Image 1: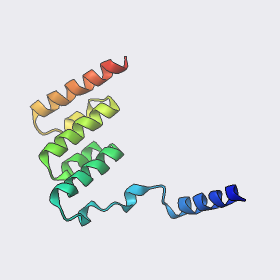
Image 2: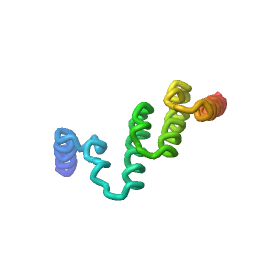
Image 3: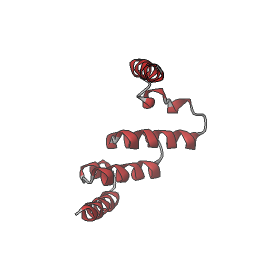
Length: 103
């Protein structure tokens, strides 16, 4: 009986979409500017969407976002999101180091 109740509750949560917490986070409602930037950063990292790193609104967090996604994917492609060549070069080095660690 207890297992049946748990399964019913899980089914209801799945039907309602509670398995997708990102759809309930609205960073734009956060009043503090820095916390809003952190929220955008965390959502972008969680989705691994390097193209959205520019939309964070904070240059340092945007740069860090691209680097972190590139390292997680172990792929240099996200590094091309950087506007500055020096940032792109640094990103590519971080990816190369991450790739070496898995070999």
